[in-house]
Amino acid sequence: MKNVTIYTGPLCNFCDAAKRLLARNNVEYKEINIATVDGAMDEMITKANGKRTIPQIFFDDNHIGGYDDVRALEKENKLLELLK
View (tube, rainbow, N blue to C red):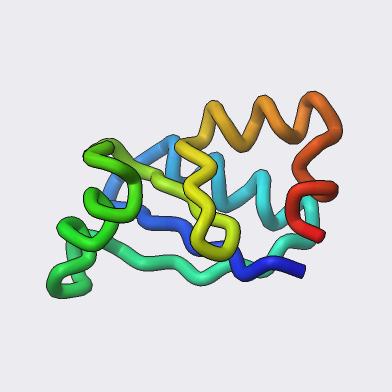
């Protein structure tokens, strides 16, 4: 199983939705809150090729995208396959 990292922020409905989606698929993840972790926003922007919106989701070092991207993978039944 790949390591999943999700960069989140305060009062972010898409972040909450992404975490619920991962939880309902029994996916463990590491959450990094860009508002409380020093340097996390810069790290996220660098890893996400300049994307500044949250959430940003990574499987190992592969950038998956935001909530809509992960939801699309789930709808296409590709999410769990990508995590193997």
